[in-house]
Length: 39
Image (cartoon, rainbow, N blue to C red):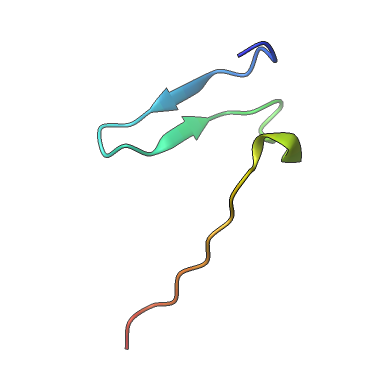
């Protein structure tokens, strides 16, 4: 990406990054999902 932030894909298909100083700027977040635990 042009931002210089490195992204990685794990073996289980999760996208990982260290962000910038440990923070991923909000412009990189397009979807947020909350899942509830099954009871």
